[in-house]
Length: 241
Ligand code: URA
Image 1: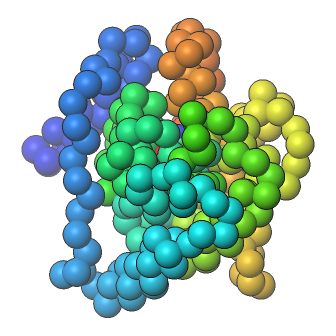
Image 2: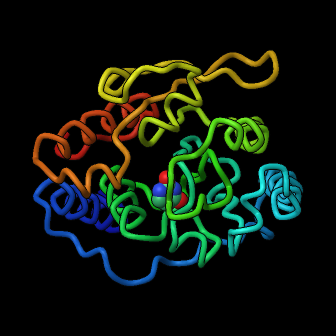
């Protein structure tokens, strides 16, 4: 094993240990995402298409949440990601910074991604709603309908191999079901793109903010089991193997 691979494996073990045993820091700023202007043509093309959608989102006033938001939270990460995480809606920190999952639950999500041997720059992270609902209330059905087209277009461009739906709102919306997250999580479902392309696998799991509120060994183990299935599907090496 090269020194670089050994370092990555060790970092992954430390991240997994921190996630499963519980003592991880949730303070401090997350690094800014990588810039993609210098990358291969396909990546630059996808980044350009995502930026066109980003501009539409910034101008959007379909549902009225633009009136109370500070910043639209478009999504960030690798435009060519094999893995996309979809959350519910921006919270106060995300609204402030215009970036997804940068508050406490975002820091926990970042730890989970690190435990998978990945970084935020390897994956793409976004939400069902692009604007913060006031007081972090649940998204309204009309808001989801108005916003969903943006997420569908983002997923059509990125074409990930696997989508992880974080929490009940994301899972129910992406799967068009009313089932609870406890029933949905733990096994793959299918997400169908808006064209004729074959569907991809979608793994629902608990939302990091639910995990923070219910921070038991059992819940962390369940999320880690879900992520191991995702890693297997992506051909990623499981720690300890
Ligand atoms: N919760 C979400 O669902 N999304 C975010 O971006 C942050 C918190």
